[in-house]
Length: 408
Ligand SMILES: C[S@@+](CC[C@H](N)C(=O)[O-])C[C@H]1O[C@@H](n2cnc3c(N)ncnc32)[C@H](O)[C@@H]1O
Image 1 (tube, rainbow, N blue to C red):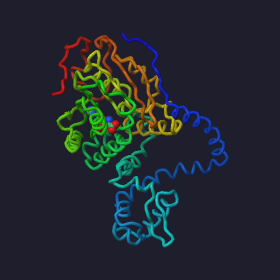
Image 2 (spheres, rainbow, N blue to C red):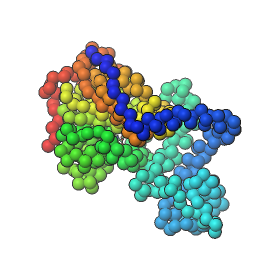
Image 3 (cartoon, rainbow, N blue to C red):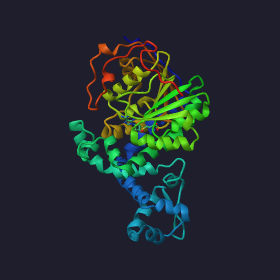
Image 4 (cartoon, rainbow, N blue to C red):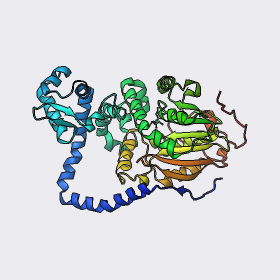
């Protein structure tokens, strides 16, 4: 049985201002757009052309070449990349028209702050995202109408039934781009999260689907009392381990290769699930939450960190509602509303205590505590991913009823 209690929503002054501003300007923006609807329609169709052009320059190394060698002529860039000069010029010209590049008076092209974000070594690089879009997203989206009919993701339709995660297992270059992008993305979030939430009472922290460990690194550096465990797919944690070693945190962090559909390290003070649940439909997300719930002690806490549809202050509903389409098409996941998240938590033995927006869009911190639940009373969720025996049977709230994870 779960108890339905209201949760607190903490909103900073800045967040409230941004939200109000977003709402205030929306009708104005609509008015402007409706006066010239053709412009918006045309822009819509430019989307894949822009991302494919960006992908081409990234893949051919043109963007990195411009950083290393400064402004260059099209001929020099084409010679270095071994591509047709005229075709390359047309891409450079098109990208310059929307601010990705700057064309100097002598005809040479140089990077702008926008294209600098595509450099491989930029600390906030979108290089991985450009690669992922070109390798997977743009081509697979042609199957989107079929996804709506069949409920099968575009990735599965395009890759003989392989899910996005299975595809990554077989395509190490794309997988590397994805993991790198997640790490960089989280680099943008991590400091904000550690400033917005007090981790000081947590001696043990488990990051579920923690990727290359960017979030954990920040938590451990800011909280010397804490030790961590990162659970992710086996092929990911090989990299995670290296990252932790490089950060000098190997002795404070265990990297566990496995699946959160099977089990989750038990008995930690705090569990973190950052930008994971939105990758999954409700059935799978519920399985993940159940496994976390079963691994927790009664006094453990859970933080879910991701965006919610109606809490997307900076861009109105622009970002989350469109990211939702990427999730729907590629992983059959979804962006959830606060009510949808709350209801899923209630079904899995949790209570949402508070919902804390941060200064970043897409980074809300949901503080959650376990409440008593008996999973035996519930029919098991049906899902495609195999479930481990243990996930289908028990969960009790008795301390010591299951092996407790203790940091060494
Ligand atoms: C969108 S990424 C988020 C990564 C990280 N939490 C962050 O915010 O940077 C989702 C993560 O879930 C991991 N993942 C996917 N399926 C998994 C599974 N069955 N078990 C454990 N991790 C999984 C992926 O490898 C990936 O690192």
